[in-house]
Length: 366
Image (cartoon, rainbow, N blue to C red; front, side, top):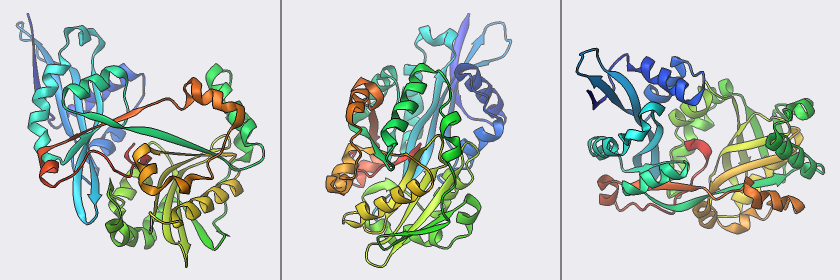
C-alpha cells in the first residue's frame, strides 16, 4: 500500500528535484542553474517543499511532487519587504489523478507564510489560477504588453515574426539576425544621454549601487532594484544575457533600463525605472530607450507591465504606443491575451497596511 508524506528541503535534494523538473518539462536544466535560482537570491534560500511516495515494502521514498516559493525583495517607499513567488510547482504525471497537491499545499503554506509580507504568481494556466484562488489569492491585476515600432518596416517585422512562430515554419533569426547588434556605447536623444553597459561593466558602475537607495522613496510597492537584486536577476543570470542602460538628463533626471539582447529585430525591456516616475520624465526617458533600440537594429520593442502600473504612471506617458494597423486582429486572436497576476497578502503584510493592488511591476520578477 502506498502512503504519501511531505517535508522541506534537505541538502542533496536538488538533484532529484531537478531531475523531476526536467522529466516533466522536457528541459535540460543543469543543477547549477537550479542552485542559482533557489539558493543564491538576495532574499535568501527559497521555500522548497517535497511530496514523497512510500510503500509498506520499505523500499524507500520517491519524490513525486514539488512546491516552491522564491523569495523576491520588494519595497514600499523606504520599507523593505519580502514577497514569495510560486515557482516550479509540479507533480509527477502518474500521480496527478490522486489530487495530492491541493491538500499538501495547504500544509506547506501555513508553515512558510509567516516569512512573507505577500505571495504572488506571475502567470499560470486556468487550473493553477483556481488552485491559487482556493488558497486566498486574488487576481485583480492584468498583464499589459506594449509593442512599439521603431522603424519604417516595423509592421512587416511584426508580421513575419508572428506568422513564423505561429506556423513553426522557420526561425525568424535567419532573416533578422544580421540586423541585430549591441547598439551604440553612448548616444544622446533630446537631452538624454544613454550609456550601454555589459553585465561585467554594470557590476563595476557606481550608478547601479547608488540609484535605488536614492529613488525608492518615490515608488509604491515594487520589486527592489538594489545592486544585489540587479546583479542576481540580470548580471549573473545563467539563463539569459542582458544589456543595461543608464539614462541621464539634467532636466528629466536619471533612469535605468535593462534589455534583452536583440533577436530577429525584436528587443524586450526587462526593467525600467526612473528617478521621477510620475512626471513627463518617464515618457521622455522611455522614448530615449526606443531611439537607442532603433539605432541598435531593432524593429520592435516590447515592454510588459500590469494595468495598475499604467494607471499609476499615467496613460499619457504611453502615447508613443505603436498602432500595428491590421495586426490588431492578431492581438484579438490571442497575441495579447488576458493574463492575470494572482496575489495574496499575508498577516505580516496586513499588519503593515499593504494592499494587493497599486503595484509597479515589470519583468524583473520573471
